[in-house]
Length: 247
Image 1 (cartoon, rainbow, N blue to C red):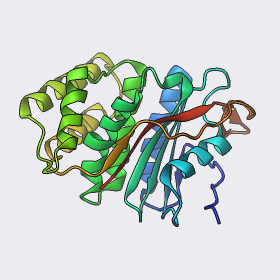
Image 2 (cartoon, helix red, strand yellow):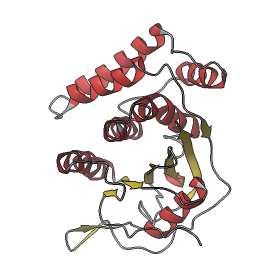
Image 3 (cartoon, one colour):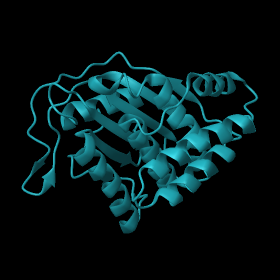
Image 4 (spheres, rainbow, N blue to C red):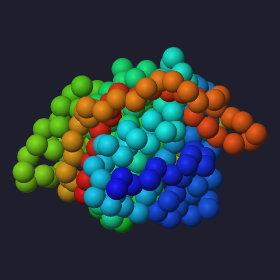
């Protein structure tokens, strides 16, 4: 029997119980700001385990039910963590596949989030990954083709190994400068440290697959973003774009 998709209860759906109350509030604030600034709907789902189901299949069933993003714009994103299976996925709506490509999604999964997950710090990994996703889709941060190529080359090596320090420093300068341009944003310094720490600590790589699954989700149905003070999807469509990883 297929694993039941939980109802969408908010931007942060912590079925695995990995977040503290303050972390939920922090993450919700980041996701709420992203939607208010860009119209992009992003939600986080953590589950205890997949119970034998394929990660990509469960992810696409989730976005099919939740319909994140606006109909016609298809600008939704799901971050899914399956705790017992040690797997994570970024599911990206049709309309964002140009900004948040499969390669960039894979980079964020592999280089930003998984280093935290290997240490058992799941909340910090999701917080840092969400911050980078938000800044990439807003255009405040970009991940260069050279960085993506080096990251993918590093991933393909059976022995793993750390990223070149020059590449780490260049990427951090880009991220640091983007936060500086945002001026009054809260928590900038904290997330700079989180992201830099994840990069410096990523000497071990988890298994990862980039690219879309073959499953598709329709772009119909759903109401507007908020209703009665709650959060709901807006009818966005997904085609399997994004990336998955394991540790």
